Image 1 (spheres, helix red, strand yellow):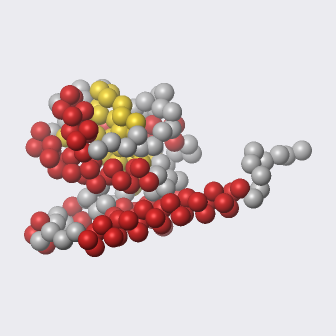
Image 2 (cartoon, helix red, strand yellow):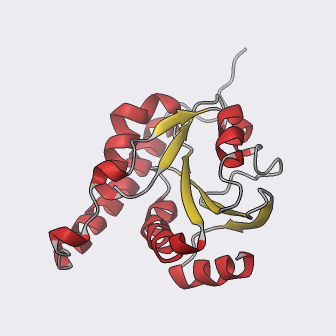
Length: 190
C-alpha cells in the first residue's frame, strides 16, 4: 500500500506558505525601490549586458568554471523561493562591481526546477536582479550539479563558493552574508 510521506493536505499549505514568503519579499523589494532615488540613466548599465539565464548541466558547469581559470569566481547557489538568497543577491552584484578590476566574476546557479526558466526564473531575475548573471540547473536533482564544486554539499541555500584563480575551491560560505562579510572573505582569497 502506498503511503505518502506527508498527509495530503500539507502540500497545498506548503505551497501557499512559499508563495506568501515570495510575495512578502517582492513587496519589500518594491517598497525599497520606490523609497530610494533612482540613479541617473547613465549610471544604470543596460540589461542587455547580462545575458538571459540559461539551463546548465554538470558537464557544462565544469567546462564553464574551467574557462574562468585565472579569475576568482564567486559562485552563488540561490532559488526564487529562498528569501535569504534574494536578500543577498544585491550585495553579491555590488561585490562583483567593486572587485571586477581585480579579476572577480560572479556567477549565479539557480536551484529552481529547470522547467521554470522561461515562466518564472528569467522574468524574476530580469525584473529584480537584471545585473545578476545566472544559470539554472538542468539536472533532475540539485546534488548532481553542485557536486561539480562540492560533492559534500548539504543543500543549504544560499551557499556561495569562492573559487581561486587556480580553479580550486577556496571557501564555502553557507547562509546569508552581508556585503562587508563577503568583502572580508573575498579579501582572504585574493
